Length: 323
Image 1 (cartoon, rainbow, N blue to C red):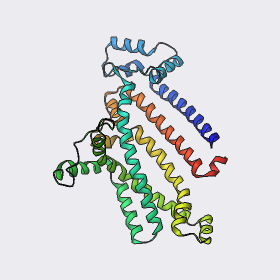
Image 2: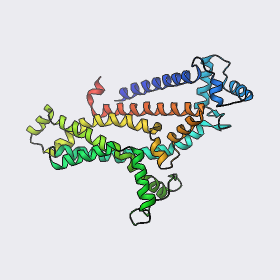
Image 3: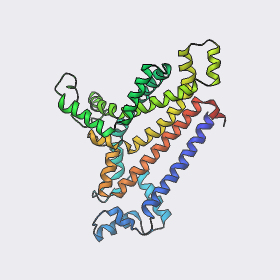
Image 4: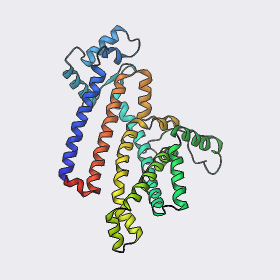
């Protein structure tokens, strides 16, 4: 297991290096475009363009420019936004990252737990009214756009029924840091968590149900039945463990993408200033240093999440460790 972990971490670092080089080349070595003009933003003066070229060392060879950029991103962390007049990019990304992490982590707990319960119940009662009802609810959850569901939740909890006993506890839209106000942090995020989790809960429940039903036809399950084990024990201790590999694969991709900014619509609907909202604002203003920092941040998080998934593979399936 230790050898597998070392090998996977080495691969992760190599992929991260490749991503950083690729992102740098896209932003700084695109033929026919002046990186100084893209960094300085629209209608920049000649003085600003000269300041950008001096600040980023754009008159030096590309490898030197790459080293300088990575140094400013990861060591000195003084990458500057010229569009926002001296705004430090890395501290800005670090400042909003806890918002996105809080949103996605809380929603992930709900959708993983809910998806496993739905999948287990549906597979255990295959063909019954409960199975069909859960699959229909799962399909409805998958079909609802998150921005539409978020607006409906806001309408119910912030406007129409906010003064009733049911939603009087819901605070105004926004975010409160966990370290300053734990209760406020939980109350402000519970509705966004549910909104973001509904889609993935339905998806994971349907995928897990299909995987459990397929596992029920395998030889090792027939062997377990022939030994006289109960259906509950077979489902939880044998079928679920192998079926979770499919769920873990989905989780690694979804969690990494959402933390990297894919939760933008949820952040916008609920007034959360996270990584997705920061990237969206930077795209509107063509703020290249912010876009580049958030792209690298998002890419690294997806790679990290997939490396953790691979390690979970090795834990769930001993055959992976033997390869």
